[in-house]
Each structure stands twice: as C-alpha cells, then as structure tokens.
Length: 516
Ligand code: GAP
Image 1 (cartoon, rainbow, N blue to C red):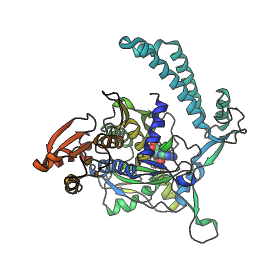
Image 2: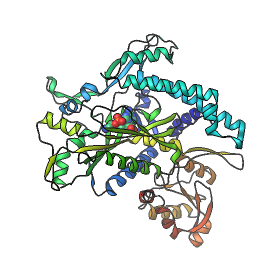
Image 3: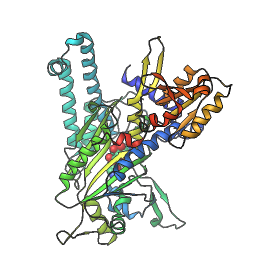
Image 4: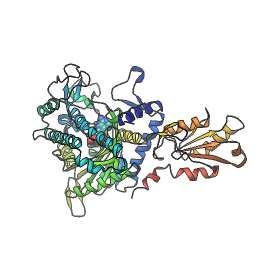
C-alpha cells in the first residue's frame, strides 16, 4: 500500500474507532483542532504516563510541575516570543490561500526524497533478492540526479533560514519561484512577497481597557518551568544538576495546519528543563540525546525508523540542538526537540523581572545562572507516530483481511476484552465477574454483541492485546480461552492465572524495563 494511502486510512480509522474526532464536527469542524475520543484519550494518557514515569519516577533528580496556561505577558517579551515567534507566510493571489513559505520548500525537498524512494522500491521489486540497495543508490542516474537537486535545495533553504540578519524573506520567495512551486488550489505561481506572522494567540484578562490586560495563550510549556525555577529549586532543595518536567497544553496560530494531528493549533507538550553547571552542558546534551532516543526505541518500532537531525545553524542563544525524527507515512518528521539553551531564558527572566535567578553551588562556593538542556516532545505527534506504526492490514490464510493496531500492550487503550460465547446460561454473569476482579488492575471491556469472530476484529482494530472467551466449560472448570492479538494464538487458561499472564505485559514498567 502506498504510504499516502496508509495515512488516509489511519486518519479515517482514528475517527471510526473513537481515537480522534475533528473538533466541533457538528458545526463543520474547526481548523487544526481535534478531540480525542474514548480510545484516543486512553492511548494518549498511556503515552503521557510512559513519559512521566520515565522522566520523573526513574530520575531521582527530576521533579514535576503543573504551571498555569495564563502567565504574565512580560514573560513572552523576555523569552523573545513577542518579537520573534513568527512564521514566514506567502499568499497565492489567485486562490487567496495562505501558506507557510518554509513548508512549501520543505514539501519540495520531500518530493525529491519521495522520487528517490519510489525509484529504489521499483528497483528492489525488479531485482528481488540480488538487489544491492547501497550500490543502487550510489550509481542509479535517476537517484543521483534527484539527490543532487534535493541537496542543492536543502543547502539554499538552510542559507535563507539562517541568514545573518534573520530569515531572508526575499531569498525564500526566490526559491519558491525558481523551484516552480505552484499553489495546490489554483495551480498558479502568482505569489505575493513573504512576510512574518506572529503565532501567539492573544486574549484579554479582566475588565481593564488599557493594553496591560493582554494575555497570551502559552505557545510552549517551557516558560512556566523557567519562571518557577527558583520556587522548585528552593522548596525542593534541589541540587544541580536537576530537572523540572511538565505536561500541558500549548497553543500556536499555525497557518499551515495539515497532516491531521501533526500540526495543530491546540496541542500538548511534554517538556523537561535540565539545569546544569555552565561548561557541562554539552556533555549533558549528549546524555539526553542518548536517553531520549532509548526511550523512543524501547517501544520496539525498530531503530531504522528513527534518526537525529542535528541543527547546523543554531538560534543565537543555543549551542547545540537536534530533532528526534520518526518515519511517518509522509516521511521522516520531527517528534521531539533536544536543545542546549545556555542560560538565555533564566538570564532574560532575571533581566525583565529584576529578580536574581542564580544557583549557589556549595561544592565550590560559586554562584551562577544555570545552563539548560531542554527535551521537548509533542504528545500528539507521539500519538500519531505510535498509531501510524501500529496500523496494519493483514491478509489472513482464509483470504480475509484483518485491520489490526499492533500497539505496544502498555499503550493500548483496552488491555483485556471479555466475551461470553452466548448471552445465556449464566455466561454474561461469569464474564462480568472476571471483569469485576480484573478492572482494578487494568482497563477491561465487556462485549456480547455479534459472533466471536466479529468481536475479535473490533478489538484488533483498537489494538486490544488480549481477549478472553467465556463458554460452558468455564462454568465447570473456571478456565477460559485466551486469545493473543498479534499471533491470534488461542489457549485455555485458568481464570485465576489471567491477572498474572496479562498484568505485567500491559504495564508501563514493562516498557520501562526495556530501558537500560
Ligand atoms: N520549548 C521548545 C519548543 O516548544 P518546538 O520545537 O517548537 O520547541 C517542541 O516544539 C515539540 O512540540 C515538537 O517537536 C513537536 O513534537 C511539538 N509541536 C510543536 N508545534 C506543534 C504543533 N503545532 N502541533 C503539534 N505538535 C507540535
């Protein structure tokens, strides 16, 4: 199946099975805002749990925080968001549609990459087992030609994005013209100039009519951590190095909001700021890169689906930055950012608030403004990567196709579904008895409608790792048929053993144990 088709199927699957709904759908929706349904919220909570337990529970020098979304407006002046949190926009005069100029260029780069991958896939099919992919990539004329075009475009793009005086907006427009990029709606190249647009949402607080009541919806959770640095350090008697972790909503007025929940206007972040001694930050940056990659890979999706994208050019306050990218159906995309932000944020807040924000190091009797390593991951992007990777349409021996989500069991919304074989003879009561005993340990679901086969399919579609069928034999010997989602293997087990077989595998610690 083409990757584009996979993505379309994932989007409709998410809606059909109660994972993600367009927001305000009965009013025709609201652009780039989504609601998580009955299964989506469980999966999302499990992802958040997996992150929180790893960051906060397994690291004895990281503590949590839940700061307010509304914050003093000067915070956003100090952080640079009021002046510089902009996207470069371009309009097509014919369709009157607005686009992010950088996204148009990135999509053009992705098109070259797609051409290369298609070419390689075709050759793979043609040559079968004898295919030497590395050699083909190094010698095929078409591949090399597209690779050269891609690399030249990437180089030009990086130059305009990292121009000395800020993004070179004219240079961006020139790339769009030179690459002959057309508006997907009008099909024309009748573009306006590129201009900057601030992404923060504004609202008013209180009844005051003067400008001081303007409040921003936070575009990142990180600033809530920075402005609480002193509170947490002092009340928690934290010693450097230490971290503060937070999960919460963030808001950005994204102009190009496509690809489902990949780029949203209201989304959720899981961020951790790790405060370190100046001079040690690059060592810690390396450590956090390794730790975060290990956390991703412990899900078992295969190392080949992840890569780092190290930033060549850095923001003026950063001295290292990388993205963790995951192979989505629409290419490798950023899921998490890891940044070495020096002491920029704390120094700015010290300057704008007039408060001294420092750490007294008892080891060498010095005071300094700590440096910060930040790890910042989008919950929704993580959700998307998990669901895209898990979605599968399997051809069965009997010719049927089953749609299954091979979710890591610890992330699955429902862990165990219990079915009475029929609705009589006391089987529903027995099934409910099993649920009543196990629901304290993990999420269980009762199903009695339709034939057993159909019930299995419904559970496969939401990724339930275990199903149990209660039949007449159960009433005699207290055993049930346990069915495994991935292998579809079925075996007879005692009800008394169910908790032991299932609980460990569906728990977050089971995943965390994959981490060294
Ligand atoms: N505090 C640093 C920060 O916010 P970022 O790279 O802008 O850095 C971090 O965002 C992560 O938040 C991204 O890697 C992505 O997973 C997620 N994210 C950012 N914008 C998003 C959006 N509009 N929709 C969904 N997720 C988004």
